[in-house]
Image (cartoon, rainbow, N blue to C red; front, top):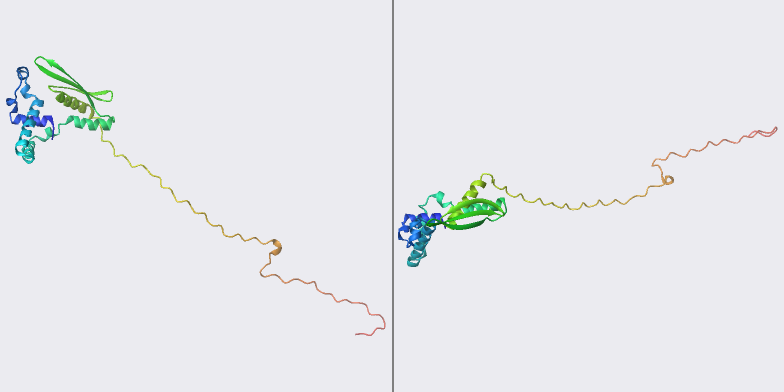
Length: 209
């Protein structure tokens, strides 16, 4: 909501440029139409309403006029948009190098915007802020076509440590019986050699049994 272009338009709607007390040089150079001066003049009027009638009156005075501003102009904060793009793309905050020079009877500013050591855009304007907005606009025109939406960061994979496997308790070992101790369940009866009756030859004359 606090934007030089927006405030300048509101000041222009009230024709505040006609009420500005300016020097002859700046008045001849079109100072009454400068966005920065019109924006400052509207802020002064808003401050006067606040001092005279209070916060609520100043709030509604501004809000009623702000709603009449076309929506594209409301979003014309090129510096803010460039800051977001530059931080996503380069990890840098834009820096503006601005210089003013007198051109005839008026003063003109030139601004170059950098992200790190790389120049992104150049702008010109009757005020430093206007030149910086133009530089940011030019930078966005050259970047926005190649800047894609940054993919959402994927959550880091966390390795879940598995609980250590419990070793199976070895069942108490049973000593294997030695071969001598192995006894078959159904042992075969011990074979006995047949007994052969002893025979002897009968002597002559012995009685028969």
